[in-house]
Length: 477
Image 1 (tube, rainbow, N blue to C red):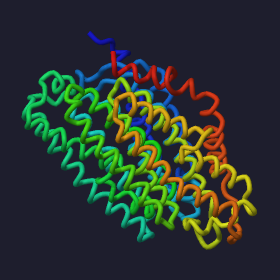
Image 2: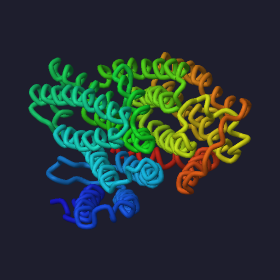
Image 3: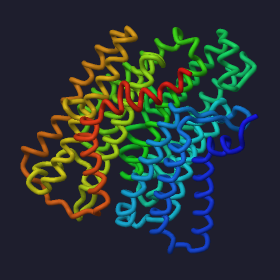
Image 4: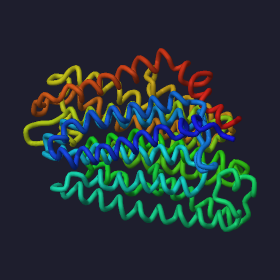
């Protein structure tokens, strides 16, 4: 019989966040607008607390009769995701104040979205998985449209909702087919039952539904529009915490539920990975909006992550965690950098508006350059080691075509990454930027230090043979 303490610790991060969200609703109802500013600190502390609880029970456990099960693999993702969500919430306040939308509901939506992240990572049953996805998705739709007076934000929320509902329907239909042909919704039960042809069709629909959540091609069509239209701090959240969590969930479902059918899904995942790398890299080349450019860049980087998934749990699980962690931290820093660029006329989102940034904001330019070089995968920055781990995983799994595409896509991506560097360092200066909130600059600086120094010095502690390998071992026990 499972110990009650172990059960509570297994679901402690989600219970903590759910309780924090409900307390926040009560405080908002009692204090109204007086709670607006405090809600951001309250939410950030709640998210950091959830990360601490996940770390405290890192080995994992089981709860609710097998509906929830955690291990080191998913708890690693929980710690990083909750921590990034807390940072994303911290950098949101100054932006929302400037646009007169700093309401306490924003922090509560972020908390409830993080509850959804925790549930999907903890899921050991298709019904639990679907419940978590909907919790995360519904909060995300509202966050995307949070700037109600902006037509772009409203359009982004509507597009995200319509396409997200379609993907959720496909996921649920796939889950129903798998249940119908295997007689079980539990991950363990499905794996033990084996997959018939009908269940295979359900598996494909589940893959398609999950691919939408991570914005993998060809289910990526919502990404550039939502990234451009949604408020920038919301996009910073989307591109970091939920992206990392959803990618790990994608891998966890394939590795644990359909692990014995790897020969069947490996080709599908490989095709999605290749399409994502090519579509993302080529699409970003023609973008003039920074947020759209980063949106296409995220599609390409999802492709790199899926190479590790296609490599299987033995070869790819640790590489996936390493790459996703480095990418998520770097991307959060880049979007914080976008938040740091504003003028009296509004936020800076055009690529050409970065002209001569080195002469007006030298420190910001250096930090952004470090982050850009990292996400481009250039040595000796952190992103290089992440891509190297993914490439090595593909080679070890004998996925030579995907390994070649990783290299080709990385070379293509230099076209737009180096263009940003050239504009910032060598073009004529544009209009001077305003001073921004210290928390935003602090996040940019911290991300740049992590990507440019910490990951470089301590990559052996994170990557192969380090924390990521230890975390990935939870899948193989």
